[in-house]
Image 1 (cartoon, rainbow over the protein chains, first blue to last red):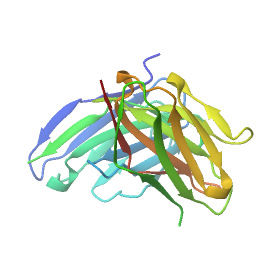
Image 2: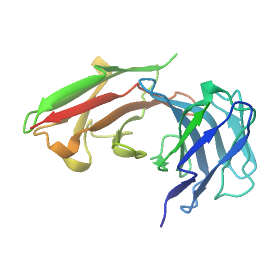
Image 3: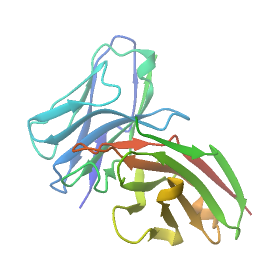
Image 4: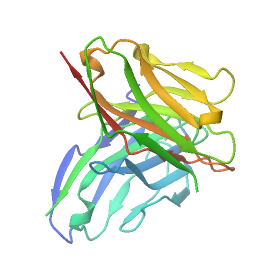
Length: 113
Length: 114
C-alpha cells in the first residue's frame, strides 16, 4: 500500500501560469481532501469530495478547481497562479466520513513568483 | 461557530521531561477530537482520537489525551519527552451536524532540548 501519493513534490510557477497537483490514494477511501498549509496558519480546507463525481467547497476555494472522476484520483487545478497561492498543499483521504482518520500525502510545495 | 484553540504556538521541553500540549474547543454537541503530528517535511499522521467511550485515549509513541467535557479540553501529554518527538502537533475537532468536517487548530511546535 502506497497510501496517498502526491506529485510533484516541488514546483515554481510564474504569476498567471496554471498547473495541476496530482493526488492518488490506493485505500479505496470515499472521502478525499485538499488542504493548504501556511506558516502559523494551520490547515485550511480548499475542496473535498465524498465520492467519485461529488465535490464541494471548503474554507478557501477561490482560485482552485477540483474533479473526482475516479475513487482513486483527486487532482487540484490552479488557474492563473497568484503569489497568494504560494503554500504547501496536502491531499488526504478518509474512509466514509470526515470524522474518520485522515491519511495525508507528503505534500507539494508551490512557489509562485 | 465551532473553534479550536491551541495554547502556545511553540513549546520547548528538555529530553525526559513531561510534554503537555493544550487544546480547547468550542462545540455545541459532543465532538470527535483528534491530535495529529507532522514531522519536518512530511504530511500529518494521526496520533490519537476520541469519538465515544473512555475519556482517556492512548495513542502512538507514548502519547495520551484526556477528553474533559466540563473544561472543553483535550490536552495531549507524554510523561517523558524524546528527541524524536520534536514536531508540529495539531488538534482538530469535528463539526456538529451531518457534515462533521474537521476544524483545525493552528498547531504547536514542540522542541526537545538535550
